[in-house]
Every structure is written in C-alpha cells, then in structure tokens.
Image (cartoon, rainbow, N blue to C red; front, side, top):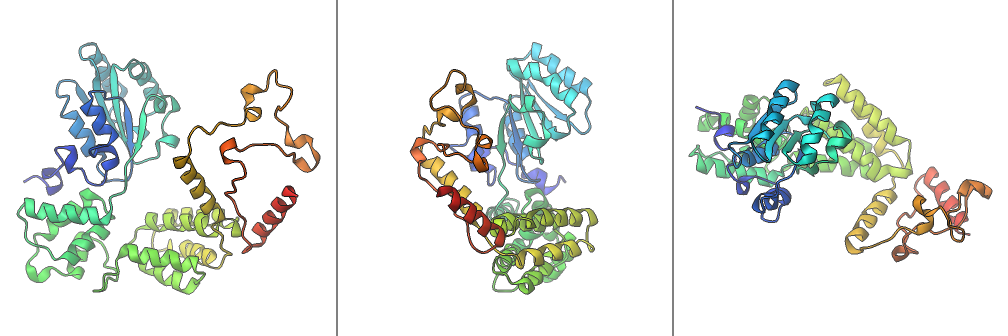
Length: 403
C-alpha cells in the first residue's frame, strides 16, 4: 500500500493547507491558472508546507508539455532536452526542485527560454532565493513565500484525514502532540499519524507515541501547555529580564531537539526586544546560535544557555521594532510618496538651486535638508529609549541635531 502522505496528496488548490494567499479563491497563482496567464515563479518555504503539491496540481493541467528537473541529481543534458521540447510545445512547463542547488552555468542556460516565455519555470526551494539564486533568474520570476503551517490548520487536516481514510479514532491530545513533534510539517505529521493509527487503544499515550515517532516526549500537561506555549514563555521571560525562568524554558525546549526553532527565536528576540538597548548582543547571539547548530546536541545547550542569559540580562529596547512596524503600516495607508528630487542621483545634473548637499562637506558631518517625502514631513518613527547607555547616547545626539 502507498504511504498515507502520498495517498492523500492534494488534487486541487482547495485541498492545499495554509496557503490561501497563493492558491485560495483570491490567490495569485489560482488567478494565473484561471486566466490562463501562467508565468515563471519560485516558491520558497519550509519543508512540508505544500510547495511540491502546488507544483503537481499545476503540472496535471499540462500533461503533454510539463517536465520535472531535480537540481541535486539531474544534469544539464536533461535540461537541454527539456528546452529542446519548446520547439514543439508552446509554454512548456518545467518544475525545478531544489532550484537553489542549480549552478550558475546551468541557470544561465535557462535565461533565453525564460525570457521568450517559451519555458515556464516553477522553482521549489527551502532556501531564501534572494541569497541563493542568480539575480538574472530572479528577475524573470515572481517569488512567492510559502507560509509555515499553523498548528490549528494541521490539526484540522489530521482530523479530516482520519475521517476520509477510515482510520481509527485518535485522542485529541495525541494529534496535538503529532503537530508539535512534526514541527507542523504536513508530510511528517501524516507519516506519524499512519504509524500511530496502528497502535492498540491501550497504547495511545503520549509516552508511547513519543517512543514510536522517534521524538523524546517533553512536558505537556492536561491544561494544554504545548510546544508553542513553552516557546512563548521562553521569549517572555527573556523580555521580562528573568534569566532563571528563561533557562528553565530553554531546558524544556531542548527536549524537542529542534535547534533551528530555538535559534530563530533567540535571534528574533535579540533584534526585537533588546535592539539598541545593547547593540552588541545581536552579533554575540548570532555567533552562539551558529556554534549551537555546528555542535549539535547535547553540547549545543552551552552556547544557547549563554545567549539566553545574555539576552535576559541585557537592557531592553524595542524602539527599532516599533519604528519599522509603524513605517510599514504607513505604506499600506499612503500612496504616491515621491522621493524629494534633490536626493535622487539622476536629478543632480543641471540642478543648481535645491540640489543635494553632501553632509561630509559640513561641520560635524551634518547639514539640514529634506529626506522624507512631503506626505510624511514631520513624521517620527524612531524614538530612542533610556534603558541602555548606547541608546541614551543616540538620544542625546539626535536631540542636539534638532537644536
């Protein structure tokens, strides 16, 4: 019998979980298909979020002119065969898995076919394409980020799968454990569900399931304190400057073995909660996180504990977090905000009055001139805090400039 994850692979966009921004009723990919205007794009996001499923659904719509290419295992000769087929099929579709592994020479080979539109490329990757894929390829593709699957969406999928496949009834706390243990990866969660459904009723306990799915059981109580609740308590303890509580929750998170998740949370905290209150902490935490990933468990606990205490005992400032959030919010409200002409390089030639003033030519490297669009004149996004010595100095510097 085929694996459960294969048997229930989505057959249409409505069955895709958690990606409504792309394939929901108003999703851009669905609109491309509905209007018969499919163009090249790259999907990137974590494993098990539906990239391959979306590509397979589209591939099924082009049975005579679609091809698959794996950048890890296939060679350039196969890609040349696919490109040659464009002579016989208009809008040939090529799905490239792990496109980030394609070398520059092979990527360059694709350019003229993508440029003419004779080859439509759907690239799939878990890596950030802005740092791993040739800019020339990127400029010929739309780039769409896949959402991480939410726990509630995955739980709903598991419940529907049990009903659809006539599997035995599984207690809700076991299904929630599967969501956590799989890191909300759909494929992993379905594989776990398939194994768990083979257990006898008396074996359906957290401890037994943890043993079966190969994940060490971490503390879950009957009130519903789960993985993401522990992660939330971890970050709130850091934000609240309680190193002891933060270390406690770190220890509980380490039981999962999910180093990537923990390091992402620490790095986020460094720049969201500490920020300019202690600007040196960001690079230190990054180095500790890299060391943890390099070491692996159990040694990874050492740099992670170091980073946790460093963050928890640092002066806190969320000034830059608030600043960028407010700026992004304004972008959604305002339109047509023109850059002042004197700071556009292309406006410099022939301009006399009102031309750009080079600050380094002035005393103390500062000269007053307008940088903000007219629509936002007087708007202040960054408001320094007094919690750390460094940001207090920034506040004094900015105050003196205004004088």
